[in-house]
Image (cartoon, rainbow, N blue to C red):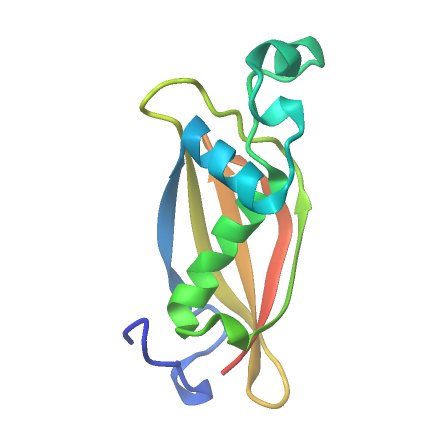
Length: 143
């Protein structure tokens, strides 16, 4: 299946894996996201403040991490409009160091349930440094 071709219900079953993705987050990405979202919370750009409140470093916006994760689904289905439900629990922050390597978030997904009316539920796993950063990350997709 190419990203431009919507998979059909006949092509998927419980356990069908979606192509995974790696996303590298750098501080410059956080600045751009803050500008687009209007979320200028200082913990996303000031290392001294982030550490003073007990964080290991500046952290990525939770909603930014959530948005990156669902790209695995939208790339697979070829149309973001086919995602009819999406939710996550934020389980761990993603520290973003001030270097060129940034922080890499790995995202994978698999069909977890076949629903009515040509819909499927996809469960996503998002990790940073081998640790889950999103819990119960699930998207319902209209095929």
